[in-house]
Image (cartoon, rainbow, N blue to C red; front, side):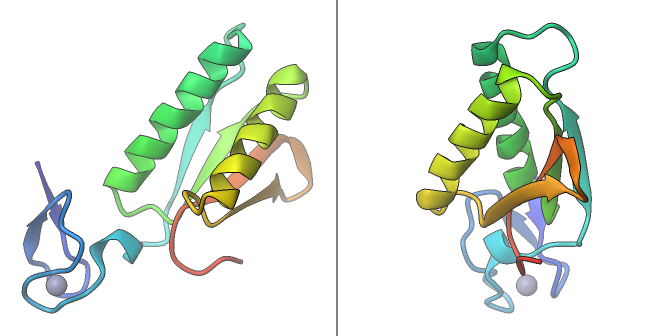
Length: 116
Ligand SMILES: [Zn+2]
């Protein structure tokens, strides 16, 4: 599979760090889109939800989305997801995360680009 450089349109490999044509940093390119994942509305256990979170992050990293909207509900899953995201932020695997417009059942995870 290939990924397209948003600056020059060159097809590059998924693991390419810098575009060989225009030298853009591929991993930081974003089309501004937000992916949406519901990880807590199907009676998931906490480990299942955390696995879904990590799959969602992997998928987001492969594309050009700027952020990920994660629907976490309001229970224990939400607390565990916040704990996991804090850790990922500490390790610079995500840029930031926050409650989505005051909606406590959803979190907005910034993957790349500017943090708003
Ligand atoms: Zn390029």
